[in-house]
Amino acid sequence: MLTVRDIMTRSVVVVRRAATIEDAIWLMRAKQVRSLIVEKAFEDAPYGIITEKDIVYGVTALGKDPSMVFVGSLMRQPCIEIPSDISIEAAAQRLSEAGIHRAPVIETTNC
Image 1 (cartoon, one colour):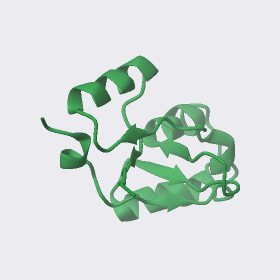
Image 2: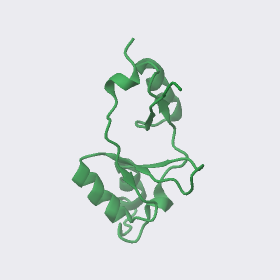
Image 3: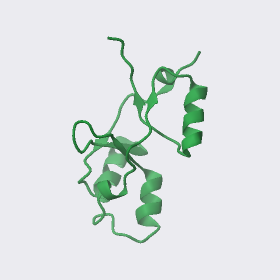
Image 4: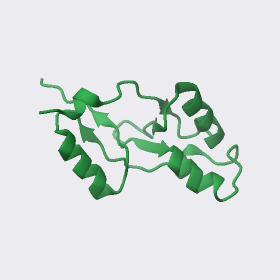
């Protein structure tokens, strides 16, 4: 069975929630990614996520200045997390049910 672990992108780029959208765009371009994981507000808080689509619809299409909008005000939190050991089909089903195209993969470990 092909799992998410077999096809996932391993390099994750994290952005601060206090960064501007302008900073996030620069980071996406520099790292050649289409989404960023947003740092936790505190240790037990969930991660957030911001995507190119969020920026296009939440900033650009509305004529907002990306240097005046902060990641924390536009990100989605909590973001849906996908376990690394589930099948591709199960992951696709979860994404479809949530109406999203990308989610961070959480590597499971055996202790």
